[in-house]
Image (cartoon, rainbow, N blue to C red):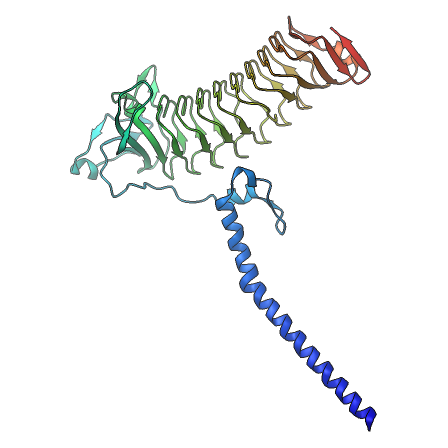
Length: 394
């Protein structure tokens, strides 16, 4: 009788334990669904929206997607005219890549703007451009209204068009919004817009034209993932630009002088897809201290880093075969250079006026080093080359 009672008690305890465990499992699943999985998706999206440069190494462990990938995935916000209900002051239309004369606001004009693209100026306070008098500040909005989103150049054969031709108005533009549907930024579009501090570019843009943002006051810029090509001098002499990141979609930066004279630029990220970088690309970027050249690059073009006076070290990728004229000339802080054994030519004045560079590292033998074709005065202040099997004294 005592044994039966003990068995009964044990059985009841087991049943109670199982019931408690099932309740706990149910509660855990419920919390996971309501507070975990749903919130996880929300949190991931919030991370992409609030991400900063310091968060770029964050990784989604479940999907193995970097924060960069997630940002690109969620970077699909529409770009529309934020002043659609406000009165504009001046407007221009673009048809077949040709810009109209200046249109001043009237009710009739507002209702009858036609063409492929319309650009409108809205008055927004005042601004005093460097070297100019205080005047009305403008925000410029560019919208697609017709069948084509292709923007014409704003200057041709030294003849300016639209806002670039309106009594120095370009110097008083402080903000630019390019709306969805525009497929390119025309050459000279915002050249010498010396008060421009903000620009929004939609994902529909695939090309940034020559001198498009040259001599603006931009400090940073988000280049969208639709952009594939950036033409010559696009950011030439943007002296306030401190950082920029080129998305993986960019495949063509072979034009010259794209960032020449960006004297405040300290950080730039180049996509791995790049295999050619134009001559003078970083020339006179005097604040740039280091740079990672993509592994696919096969030539270091002429003047690519000339007068980058803060650049202290450089590793030349393993696929590079030629280093062209004056590529590192005037890099007075340069103390550490590594050259791969793939290099077959080092051109004239490559390291001229690199006053602190006395030794370079070569990833090959002394015999391989001696077989490299070298131009006149290539070495500057270099006195020795450290090879894998010894040191070559110059």
